[in-house]
Image (cartoon, rainbow, N blue to C red; front, side, top):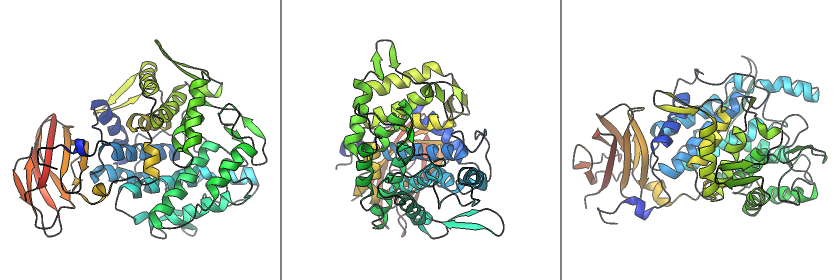
Length: 473
C-alpha cells in the first residue's frame, strides 16, 4: 500500500457512519457511558416481560458491536467501554432478580439463580454479548472465573463467567437431547431465542478452543422439521412447548430476527426464512413504501406494549440487512421514520414510541451489511484488524468516530466534531515500538511511538476530519 492509498480501497468491508448513524449511536453511548450504578434514561416498566432492562442492555451492546465491526474495527476507546458497561450492568440484581419469582410461579420451586435452569432469556442473550465483545476486542476479563458474580444478598452469590454461562446453555439444551431447544419463560420455547444460544456456543468454542457446541446445531436443525417448528411455507412457529404443542404461529419480528441471527449457524434456513417472508407477501415493497401482512402480535411493540408495528419493522430490517435485501432495508428504514417522530437530546436521536429493544434492532439493521452477523459470530476478522494500529482513546462526545480501520501497519480515521470545532488529543496503541510514523490531517506531520507502542496525537477537529498514519520507512 502506498501512502496515498486509502484503506477503504484495501479493506472495503468498512463503511463510514453518516450523521444519522452517529446520532443513533450517541443514544446508546449516552445510556451506557454513565456510571455503572446509574440507570438514567433506561426504560422502567416491569422486569418479567419484554420491556425489561435485560433486553435494553442486550440490544444496545449488540448494536454497538455491529457498529464497531462494520465501521470502526480499529477503535476501542469509549465504544468498547460502553459495551463493557452493558455487560457489567447485566449483573445488577434489578436485572435478574425477577427470575426467583418467575421460577416459583412457573415451576413451584424457589431458587433465585437466573442461569442454571430454563432461562434462555437471561443466560443466552447475556452470553452472546460477551462473545461479540471478545471477538472484536483483545479483552478476556469476562472469561475469568467469578468475573460476573450475581449477588442476591450478602450471603448468597452466584459466580459466573463466559465459560460457565455457555456451559449452562449446553446443559439446558441437552436436558432433553431429542428436543434440544432451550426453554424461556416457564415451559415455553422460542426458536428465535435459541439462535442466541447457538451463536454463543459457536463463539465460545472459536475464542477458547472448546467443544461446547458439539452436535447441538444439527440436533436443533433436525428438531425444526421433526417437531414442527419450521413450517412447509418456510416460516417459523414463534412459540410452543418442548412437547410439541404450538402456542403462536409465525410473527414478523421473530422471522426477521431469525433471518439475521440464525445465519451464522444455519445460513440456508436463514436465507429460506427471508425468501419466505418476501415471496409469500408477508413483506411487500410498493411505490408507497412497505406493506406488511400482520398478525395481532405484529401490531404491538412488545418492548414497551405500545400499539405499534415498529418492532415488527425493526426485526424485519435486521433480516433484510443480513440477507442483502437493500430495497427492503431502505423502505423499512423510511417507514419507521415516517411512523415515529424523531426526538433529539444533546445530539442523540431516537424515535418516539419505539421501545429500546426495537431501537436496538433498528440499529442492527442500519449498521449491518450482508452476512455481517454470520461473519462476526464466526470470527471473520482480518488479521490486519487484530494487529494493526488502533485508536484507543478519544474524548466523548467531543470526538465522534465515523470510521477507523487498519491494514496492519497504517491507520485511517474519519472523525466528526460532536461538540464543535476544537483541538483534541487522541491516544494511539499497537504501534511498532520506537517506529516513526508519518501523519496527515493532524497538528503534526510525524510522530514516534513509545517503547510500548503508544503515542498521543493532537488534531484540530473540524466538522469532518480525515486522518491517516503510516510508517515513515
